[in-house]
Image (cartoon, rainbow, N blue to C red; front, side, top):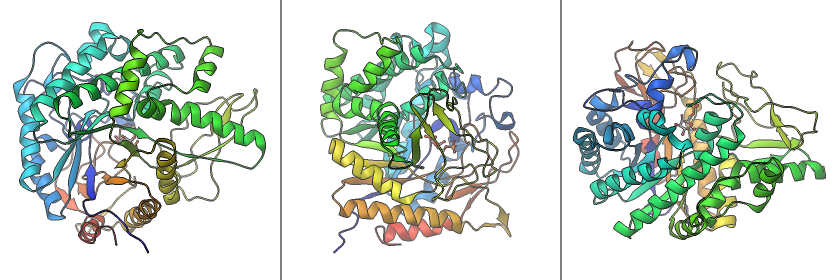
Length: 477
Ligand code: BGP
C-alpha cells in the first residue's frame, strides 16, 4: 500500500530575486552582475531586463496573500546580495535587510515557511570590478561574510537554507558558453577554478550556519539532468559514465562527500588543468559534507548520452531560445559523449524533454548514492500562456505537474526521503535567456516582452487552483 507524502511535506513554489523583484537600484541596492550584463546589446532575448521584472519588491504582500489562499507551506525565494551589501563587501545596507525582514514576516503571518536561497546568480558587480568576482579566492570570504549576516539576521525565523542555486549552470554558462555573466567562452581552467571557489563558499557557509543554529537545515540546489545511455552498446555505457562524472557527480559528490570524483580529476590532469587549492580545503569540504541536511534538486529534464568519436560533435551550447520545437542543437564533447534527443519523450516548445519518470530516477539515484533527504527546489513547465476572456487556461501545465508529482510519490514509497516540492515558479518571472515570453508561473503576470510594458496585474491560472487541491489532499490530485 502506498504511504505517499509525509504528513509535514512542504508543498511550495519558488522564485529568484533577479527574476521577480525589479527595483534594481532602489533603497540603496548596488548593481549586480545581471544588472550590468543585460545592458550589453544582444545578451538577452529582445534585450529584456529585470529592472522591473514583475515588481515583487513592491507587490510582495499581494503575492504572499495569493500563496496563502492556496495553502502554500513554503515559499522559496533568494536574497539579492547587493541589496544587503551594495558593494558586495564593506558597507551594510539596512534598507536591504529590511526588505527581506518584511517578506519573511509576511510569509510567517500566513504560516508559510520561508526557504531562502543565498545565491541565485546575482553577484554584486562591484566585486567583479574589485577583483573579478568568483574568479578570485577573495570572493569566498566576502560571500561567507554576507552569508553570516543573513544567518544571524534571519536565522531566528528561517529554518531552510539553500546556499547555492545551480552552481553547475551558472558556472558553465558564465565561463564555458558565454551566455551568463561574465560571458567567457571555453575558459576551462577558470571554469574549474571558479567552481572550487564556489564550493568553498558553500562549505564555509554550511559550517558557519551550523555553528549558529544546530537545528537549521542546509544544502545547495543542483540542476540535475539524470542520463540514459542511448543504446546498450558498451561504448555508450562508458560515455554515460563520463557524462555523469563530469556533469552531475562533479558537483553532488563535493556537496555530499566533500571530494571531487577521482575520474574527473584525472580527466582534468589530462587536459593540464590544475585547480589551485589551499592545503586545508579538502578538510573543510569534508566537514561541511557531513553537515548538509539535504540535496536540493532542480529537475526539468533527463539527458540522453551516446559515444562521441574524436572527430564528432563539438558543441557545448544547445540552448534553444526561439520557442520553436525542433530547433535545439545536439551538444557534445569530441572523444567523450554527445547528447542526442530522446525520441521516446515529448518536448516543450524550447525542446526540453518532458520526462516525469526522470524525477523519480533522480531521487532514486541520489538516495542510493548519498542517502540524503531531498528537496525538489524547482520543477515546472515553461510555455506560451495566453489570456482568453481574462483567464489563463493551462491544462498542459497541470498535466506536467501532476505526472511529476505522481512519480515523486512513487519515489517516497520506494524509500526516498523527500522533504519538499517547489513549483517553478509562483508568479511568472523573467526567464534568464528567454525574456518574459516563456512563462512558468501558477500566477500570470500581465507584462509584455518589452521592458516596462503591461499592467503587472496578477491573474491566477487554472494550474493555481489545481495546485490548491494538491496541497489540500497532500499530493493526491
Ligand atoms: C533554472 C533556474 C531558474 C529558472 C529555471 C527555468 O535553471 O534556477 O532560475 O530560470 O531554470 O529556466 P529558463 O528560464 O531558462 O527556462
